[in-house]
Image (cartoon, rainbow, N blue to C red; front, side, top):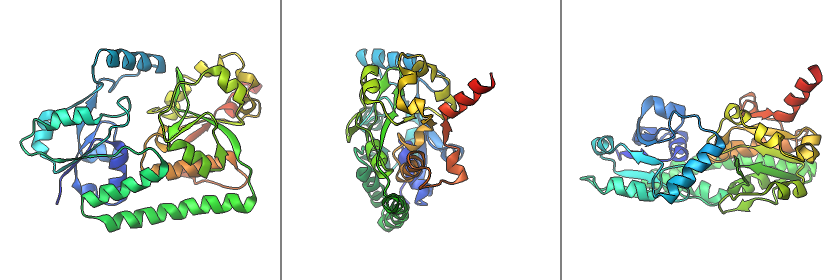
Amino acid sequence: MLTVCSFLPAVTQMLYDMGLEDHIHGVTFECPEIALKEKQPVVRCIFEGKNYTSLEIDAFFSASKNQGKKLYYVDEELLSEIAPDVIFTQDMCDVCQIDMACTSAAVAKLEKQPALISISPASLSDVFDNALTIAKALGKEEVAYQYLAKLYDRLDLVVDALRASKAMPKRVLLMEWLAPIFNCGHWIPDQIAYAGGVDMLSNPSGDSTVTSWNKILKYDPEIMVIAPCGFTIERTLEEMHLLTKKEGWRDIKAVREGKVFVADFDLFTQSSASTLTSGIELLAHLFHPDVLSISEQLSKKFHHFEKSRSNIETTS
């Protein structure tokens, strides 16, 4: 059996989803909880265990990049012990995950050279194709087809329900970061489109970029989804004051109509095919609640921010 190290939480998730977790011997500190209970973390980060604010993280990354320093590092001794046949890494973002350059530097010191496979999707279709890439690398291509067929069936249910109801697309803004504000990019605009929305400030199949507050005020979204990369709901709620204190916040249509939602990052910025499909189902419910319902489990992945604020203000 081939031995694998997964340097990406999304790849680890897909390996588990496809029943291929026995191949995994090394993961990252950010991998899904089940993997961290069973596998050895090989990739660590200088942010690990810290609770920096959005502004501090952005400043730290900018300074590190200017100084040529890396945020992630490999436990080279452990990697040597594992002696993997395959390492899955990425070359898309050196803020969110360890990149190909860091991985290559660590691998160069190994006695046995593994196959390095970069999983760097730009679009939603790329993410689904990546499941095939992962399974093929392990000689398990048929498993991926079965996995993807179930996910496509779930997407069809969303699309068919929206079509049957003749739902009009909602004007949406999804934020990937709070300070500074970043729009959404890569596959997230595809998720929004599948769910019956459109984000005109997004960057489909490209990097998310800093977006000015004035541009957001002019865009005046009907629905806002706040899902900073790497942040849970609780973590994001700690920093929502960065938005609510901005001039014009209360004038935005989404705020006036109580359609501001905070969501867990893994449904959007963790690019496994299953989590992104769940993200689409959640968004479809938030955009068109009369058309699509969600499971109790999925309902725990978002927080109705403005509704909770209204309740507090009413009772105080």
